[in-house]
Length: 225
Image (cartoon, rainbow, N blue to C red; front, side):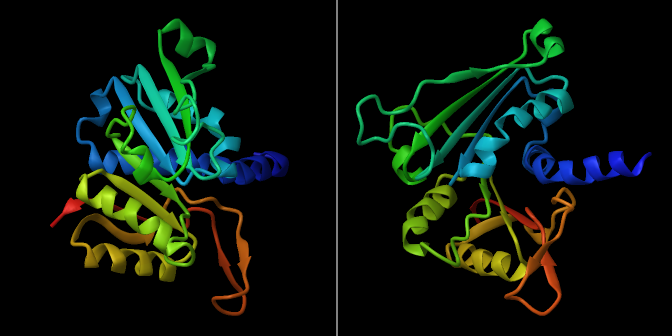
């Protein structure tokens, strides 16, 4: 392998961490995953990085041969979709292009966006419980804790399988402390995510010479104890 190719693959993990982290979460919560023909994923608190890499969600079709239909819903204050306070409610479900092989096999994927908070979206008639809700770097223990609290309670009370990632172990432990207080059942306690991005980012707050990575730590919860 040339150095140029190695660098290309190394940097590609910045984007590929998204579908691979989701896939690992699905493997933890869905025993029937290898035979699943349809999946619904909710990206909670979706922001720029998730929207910039929406095309890569097709990798889930490539890695799950039985999967025919993938539905992704992005929800968050910065989502481009309509909010409940605007005419039309949810934005239109958009069919995303697939590779020629997927198309020839009748496989498809769609994306729908909702601009607003997840617990508000859950009150709409369009809400359907997902196979997995995903919170990439919500930072809910660091900022805007009050606005996140109703969403966290809803995810726990509705027994929604929920995957969360953080930049640091401290951040993950703080978030799980809140979940423990709510009596959440932890499927996976905080651990290093083997599908984290590989390019390191300097961390000037934790300690000298420290680094972190996108999706560095992960944990999963579902329902209550």
